[in-house]
Image 1 (cartoon, rainbow, N blue to C red):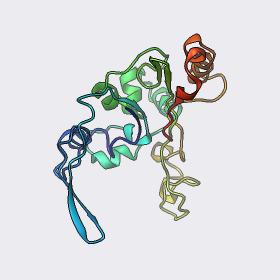
Image 2 (image 1 turned 120 degrees about the vertical axis):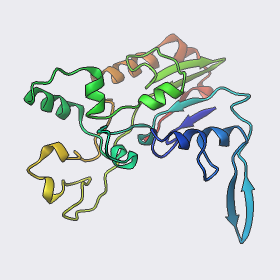
Image 3 (image 1 turned 135 degrees about the vertical axis):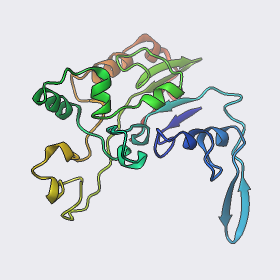
Length: 220
């Protein structure tokens, strides 16, 4: 099974993966154990999902809803999800505050996909580990990049942390900026992921795969 994100809504909310009280958590739905009411043309039916992951491996691609923003220990999970921050900007703040930057600090103060990586066991054959990877199944070569960005509203309202502007109240406070729809993992020419993808598409494994069965799975 190839599953392009978004897999859930807020990735650090465990119930969305395992036991959402609305009956439509991620894993129960793929096990045939969902319990969710659907209405169509005035007729209500009970949706149970299907027995899928009991019989087939699951390979996912990260969407923006598999990425959490800054952690502060106080805000709601929804607020933390919407509060991702540029890695470069976080590193600048650390430099200004004379903070020694560890990988954990950088993830807590920018964004991370830790829950996604801990839940799934995926190939780790790229510089991104489980975040982007490639795997062969028979004659099929599955290539899964990490190409997604933080969604920001196109609103131009004065308090919007938006696609095209920062809110008026935060103009002089860059620590609260949203930086627009910033991309999480660079894919530009010369980046680690770009070079990996170029190498993968030139690899023997990709070249020998049946052309009709070679997939590039993207989640934007």
